[in-house]
Image 1 (spheres, rainbow, N blue to C red):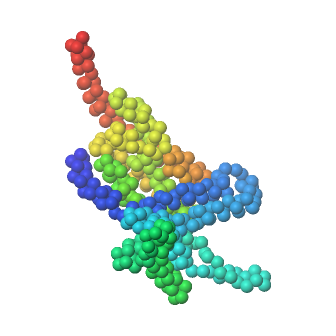
Image 2: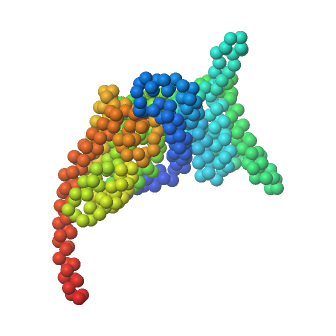
Image 3: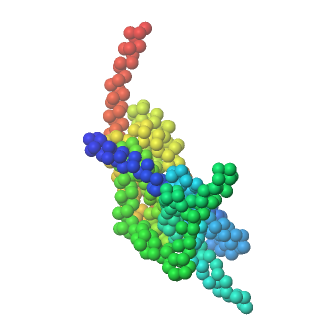
Length: 434
């Protein structure tokens, strides 16, 4: 096991290093992660609008009140416009990496996403003439792929415009803000005018094209069933192997975050997609990668003093899905004794989760909540109050404990024997010095 992991370490380190330096993947990560606080706040509006507790009659009466309508407006303006925020964030991040004007890149990207959105005809009310309005559907999770694409395109156009001197440059004495505005003028025309012509003159729905070729296949692979099992199995295996090699898996899995965000926001509208960060965090990776919530509590019963000491340090962070103290302290990384349960426990949890959600016994998460919530609590809140979700999280925790237990006992016996063998040396050394 250790020899195999050593052979894997170098190529995976190279991959992690390349991913960590790739500007486009990093820009996608920054844009998606930057939008998460807004999605989280929007989800809080939804939680208050549809509280998970209370009788059905009281809940129905409460949801019919005007106050709930105002709460849902807050949800729609935050979660429903997530594509707009991601477009700005992706362009801002990539432009900053290219040493371009990040603010103009973000604004042009947001404007481009709006420009691609076709206007809809409003239904006339009474004698009033029909007007046009801007649909929000393409500015939310449904337009997330297009938001990422326009966020990557704008800085590239700006970079080429600078390279070929397609910028309006003002004298040195002009205030920097004014100079930046004029330098973004020609790249803005190059981006926005063709988009306007394609969408509003030729009537081509770019969102539908992207959805057909990119979004629909991804969403199909996120529906509970065999396809989502294979996709999430690959994610889990990559995550576990990378962590076992001592590499932080966030660098490798960063591009997937945009898919997780798209899926969870789509679930708020009833899409029923399993491949989300919340499903992984609260059903499968309870306690962190490798489903390690149970590990410190098993180690508290260890005979080896060193293991008990690490367990005391790692137990509280593990409750909140922070398991670096365990991975680097036990250690789990480069440790053949724990490699098998570190991989097997989340795989078993994935199987139970896919079966439970595919059969309709447990709902998929539909709200973004803080990833640091303890597993059952996060499952309860992210599913808008499902006790079945809590039960699934607890079942997976129990299964992880059963899987880890024999391996922990074997490792404990080995380390306790090593500690016992070292004990006689301490009194001897003390006596000689006296």
